[in-house]
Image 1 (cartoon, rainbow, N blue to C red):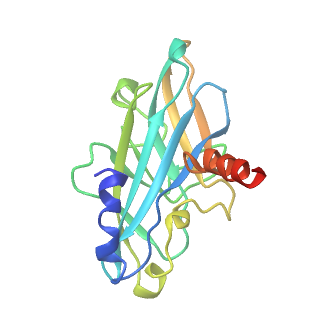
Image 2 (cartoon, helix red, strand yellow; image 1 turned 45 degrees about the vertical axis):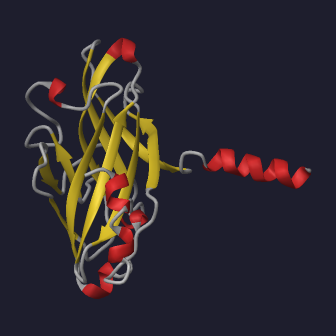
Length: 199
């Protein structure tokens, strides 16, 4: 289910519990090898008093000349929240993956059984391709009522998100952190507002 589809659920869920927004956007930040790049978004929607869904959409934007697949990702969430992969996912669920050297993370997903990877890297997200992974969220009612998209990019203990790349043409791999960025079109809108004010 894509974030667009999830947003259609918002009016129905808003009166149930929690909150939802138009997605939190992030892109690649510092990395180990300087090879992999990506963009992504997270969208949380409450589906009940103690349940919700989190969609993580990732696009591999690495330079096409050196190949490379995005094969795993991990992120930190606020306290009191449990996640599991929603039915139908083609990736494997990770709990407490070690995203060395960026530390341990709470949850994630991988093409293999581990963060470091195994099997063909080509099972990952190819350059120019996008994958949406959906997680089921569980928390008690008081916690779930406070959750927003940013609750799933918790940087209070260090890095909030990291992606794993494998299979570059030069034989290298990479681990790339994620940093929050403005929503697409937001900067253009700010520029438009500034232009109108000058008139």
